[in-house]
Each structure stands twice: as structure tokens, then as C-alpha cells.
Image (cartoon, rainbow, N blue to C red; front, side, top):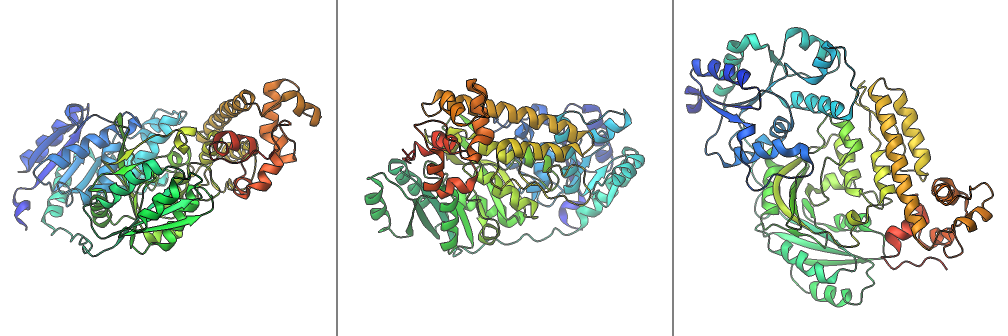
Length: 556
């Protein structure tokens, strides 16, 4: 028996259900355990809580709590599942306070079981996501608390339950099981890579010389010293870029690649191909890194045996944003929202070689790359500590809000795992060049075949697609490049009313070769820029959102 197990310790993390937590406290105290009660409602974070996305609140609270406490535990018990227990299940090996702790989750009141007992359907997205999160939490746990009837029912529903499952009436058996866990010598952690391990930092850049130098300086200031910085110039046209790159490539540790304009995904992939490091980090030219970015992410990667570590970020000193990753079962969240985070990450180079950024996407390319990784079984760990300083610039992809690319991302293909009903978007071929409407109908037809949740999500997609199409149509109408009368005269099947004409052009007119006005030739634009044609994006929409600011010609 190791020294700690003579008086083993447990941390009981609880929320509003004080009575249940108190019963568990008495059970462990009477058995001679040191017990610490951690009330989520009374925890105080380090700094302000993130305002977006809101669901990471509890994960950030428990992260700060365990990071700042000066002791370690043999077990940590969550009285309810949620983002706090999910995060600890994913990242506990990198947290000294609980790195050797058994993880116990109380699933007695899990939502899917509760809905079943009350004969209620999963009829809201929030319920769907909660069920998916609970599934992920129980898979990450060492022990689950639930009734026997519940255990059998969830097993038949395809839940992957831990080997040890106890009911709330078997607390003494739970205590004995955890005591045996405490008496087991802790597993050896993977050693940190040697300080000679090379890490490559890839910085794509395009026409931002005034910001690039700052980004490079933050890369060179890393506490992990064995680095190479690979700057990939994506066909910059700003005259100030060339002399700056010439100066930079004279500095030690810096390599400069130059390519024609192919957008940020191609630039990142080009950097990965020449990277010599076992690990690769990405940094956009308008952002900066905390000095401990590499050392912290490398520790998390090593301890958790992850393939990618994605840290939190501060947005222009206004708010902090954190993510929690996809999780083995959070497929619905992956398909509907970006649960992974920004492209700034540290990843194993072999994982990036297997899953490059999709070069045909005009936006949300990081989301697609991360989703591809986790569907392939890669381990992605998000670390809720601010290690990136993120700056919005007028022509950044996140600022331009490419609604079309975002909608395509919502239709992300998800590979069915086993017979899971909630592998909602299986076999969707959205990387093909197609219109938003056709993609939306494909999604809807797939979802209609899935009971309850599928019908609900089909309605959600219809509403989402309609709203985004209206925004895009208004953008076209407000420009000087769409003329409803011209378009209707050219395309005999088009309605003459302006909004309907714009929608017709967006959905099908451009695919048939019709041009929106005398001022913009969409066919010539696509011929001139093969990357736009390959992306399957409407040419005028691309020009208004990206091409104009990038200096592309409108083909007239």
C-alpha cells in the first residue's frame, strides 16, 4: 500500500444537489477517507469566466480549482455529469491534483434515462447535446453510479459503461473499490520530450506586414527554445511584405516559403510539408502566443497522450474563450457547432499529415480538420488556459462571416459509429461542388430517416439554411454587382422581384452560367480563379466576402 492510500482522499464535486453530496461525504468520512467538498456554485475562477461558449463555464471553474489546490486526490466524484466531469475525464492526466485519481460519475439522474421514465422525447437541441455529453462522460469514467435497471437499459441503448457500476445503495462497495484503486501503484506518466525535441511553428501570412513581425516575435520568445519558424507567404501583393520577408529569412530559426495565393489552408499545409519538427504549432499572422504556449501544450500532449492540444484564447483583451473538444460521442455537437476551437494548436506532425486542412474551404477550415481527426479516432484535448491572444482584423475570415462556408460546415460528414442513432449526418458528401439548397435538402432527407431527433434537426437545418440564404441575398442586393432586372431578362425562369431573383441566382442560376449583372461576369471569375471554382462557392458571394479585399479582379 502506498503512503497516500493509508488515508486516501476524495474530492466530491457537486452543484445544487447538496443532500446527495452530503450523503456521499458521510460515507467516505466514516470509512476513514479525507474528504474535500467542492461546490461549483461557490468556486471562484482565475479571472473572468468566459462569455462564449457558455457551456464551458463549469469546466473552467473546476480547471482553476484543481490547478490552484496544493494537494492530490485518490478519487474525484462528480455528483452530476456535465462539462466539468467531461473535461476532467479528458485532461486529468495533465493535472497534478487528479492525475492518479479514479474518476466517478453519478449517472442516477442522467437525462436520457429520465426522459425514458417520463415517456418524453428528445425534442430540443439542448436535450440532444446533454445526452451526448453524458454519454461521453460515462465513457471517460472509471466507475459509474446508477441503478441496475438503468444500467441494463442504457446498455441496450448502446452506452459504453465502465466495468464497475454501483447503485447509490452500494456506497460501501464503491468505497472498497476506490480503496483498491488507491492501493494500486500509480501508472507511470510518459516522460516529457527531451529539450532537444524540435517544434515547428507555421505562420501563414497575406498582406499584413505590420502584424507579421509581432507574431514572429511571440514565436521566437517561447520558453521552449528548440524551434523553427516557417513563414508561408500566400501570394502577398502589399509592397511592404517582400522586404520584411527578406529581413526575416536572414534571422536564425526562420524559414520563408513563397507561393501563389491559395488561401490559408494551403499555406498551412505547405508549412507542414517542410516542417522538420515532431510537433507542429500554427499561428496566424494577426495573433500572438503566450511565452509558455509550446511548453504547456507539449506537457498536455505528453501526459494525456493526445494528438492535438488546443488552448484557450483572449480576444482583443475583451473576453476569454475556451472549448472542450469533440469527445468520442459528441458527434451531434461536432456537426452543428465548432466545439474544438481556433486553428492555433500544437499537434503531432503525423496527425496533421493524415488530416490536412481542406484547401477548398473558404472558412471554418480548422473546424473541418479537427472534426476529421476526431472521427478518425484521434485524441483532441482542449486546455482552458489562455495561451493565445486573438485579434480581429477587418479582413480576417472570422470577421467576414462567410455564411455559405459556415453552412457547409454545419453539414459536415459524420461517420456512423456502430449502430448509433445519433450519428446524424452520416455519408453526406458536402465537399462536392453544389449549391447550398441542394446540400440542405440532402441533409434534410437523411435526417428524416432518424426517429425523433432526426425530425427535429431537419427542421433546424431548414430554418438555419433559410436565414443564411436571406442574409446572402441581401448582401448581393446591397452591392452594385447584382441587377434583378438584368438577371431576370437574361434568365427567363427567374422571378423579377429583387429578393427572389437574388435567391434564385444564389441557389441555381450561377450553376447554369447566368451572370448577375453587366458589372460582374461570374463565369469569367471562376475561370480566372480555380480555387474559387473548386470550392463550389457562388462567385459573386465570394468576390464580395473575400475577393474584393484580396485584390481579385471582378472579370470586367
